[in-house]
Length: 396
Image (cartoon, rainbow, N blue to C red; front, side, top):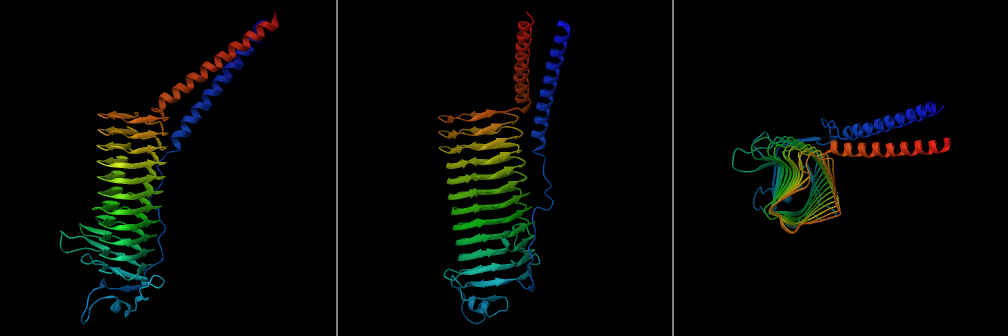
């Protein structure tokens, strides 16, 4: 009888252990399957735009004289209406323009006092015969109060041709456009201020998806889908700007990059599957990197030569190498981040004064799984010994 009961208890213990090991294995498998690369072949829905074919358009709001292509001329054309006020802007709509590889599709200059809107158009194949000058499907220079809304901006074809180039501008809003397959980049802002880039689909451009350069300030980059560009979002020499709630996925180098910047907030973005670094910060200060999900990149976050920044409450997981790597970056505050299941661990080189507070760091998923497995086995073994002890006391 004694041997029979002991055999039954032993069998029960073995079943419990095997069941627990099976559950742990399934958890580990599910954790890996959660991060399978998605199908990104068709990430956007194209808009129904461009009902009227037209030649490339050039508008200089300050032009005078006979045949001057200013707003007075533009509003006399079939493709433009409005009065240039805030409630009734000049509106250029429903055009289909091909730059034929040698022209900007639409170019607006020196519009400093009139409101204008470009919406529901198709612009494609912009280019420039001069290899040293920028070209763009939409080219805006020295202007204010422009809205670029719900256009398809496709396939700018010369070496320096962009989907959209905004230079020396103020109060420009770029919303809900599809911008893809442009030779140099998707959107570039240079020396521009107080502008918004939101809710755009930016796909497969050969330089940056969104580039903000040359001292641009107060640029808000919000809610964009940025996939398969060389870099996703880049800011250089910028300040007082925000990168918020974007999905930056499967770009060929960086997801988000800031160089020589200050007072930039990078918050609540999903940054994943980028081939090099999820978020890369160089020679910058007072950068807030908060509430981002950074996963399945080669590296999670890199700070290089960057001081007095804040890295708060990010989830950094399943990156192939270092989840967070700081080089010669001092007096940064690193608080409340969850850093798990990366192949390496948090690393600092030549750094002084960085504060690490309440971060959860547990890397190398095979070690994590092994720890859970050992802990579970020890617990079950102790439970089995306790059951045997109680059974023996009951037999006496």
